[in-house]
Image 1 (cartoon, rainbow, N blue to C red):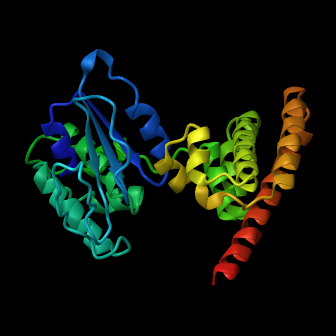
Image 2 (image 1 turned 90 degrees about the vertical axis):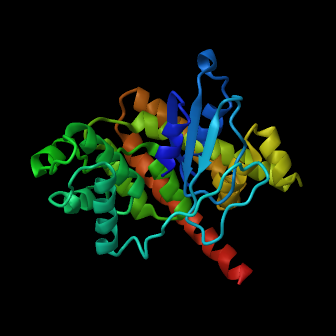
Length: 295
C-alpha cells in the first residue's frame, strides 16, 4: 500500500529507509535540494516518530509504523491502518500474505512462496521487493516457476563495518567478530574497518567530553550538526558506554594500526580484533551496570 501511494504521487524517485539503521542517510539525502525540481518520495519503515520533513516543496514523506498506536503529527496529511500479522515467526501467516501480494500483481506465487520466505525471512519489505521483480518477469495470470524465482532471489545480505560497530555498541564481541570475518573473507578490508572505528571512537570521545562539561544532549546534537531526532535515536543510547580514557586509548591504538596496515604489517589485523573485543566487552559491562543502577 505504501508503494502504491508512492507511485500514485507521480514522483520520479522513491527512496526507502529503516528508522533503525537508515536515519542518517534519510536526513542527509532529504535535505538536499532536488535536481531539476524533480518529485521525490521518502519511505521510512519501522517508524516510531515522524522526523524532519524533506527539503523539496514537492517531496513526499511516508512513515510506516508497526506500533499499536497511530503516529500522530500535525504535519501529517493522511493516515492509514494496515492489516498486521500475528507474528513474524508464524510462517503460515507470512506465506498467506505472500500469496495475497501475488494476487494483487496478478501472478500465482504458490510454487515459490516458501522460497521467498526462506530468502528474506522476517523482512516483509524485502519480500515485497522480490515479488515486484517477479511480477515484471512473469506474464499476468501466470504461475511463477521456481527457476524464475531462483534467478533473481538473493540469499545473502551485504555487510559493512557499520555492522561491526553496531555489534560493539550492543556489547556482543562474538557477533562483531563474525561480521569482521565475513567482511574479510574475500578482500582485505582492514583499512575500511579501522576508519569506521576511528570515526566511532572520535565521535563518542567528543560526546562524552561535552557531557562531562555539563552540556545537554540537544546542544551536543546542534554542535555536532546532527539532527536532534537522529541524535536521540542513533547516538544518545550509547553515550557513556566507554570512558573518555578508554576512547582516547582506542583512537590512539587505531591510528597506530592504520599506519601498520598501510606499511603492510599484518599485526594490525590481530590488534584490530583485540580492540573490537575490548570495546565490545566494555560496552556490555557498562550497559549492565547502567541497567542494574536504573532498576
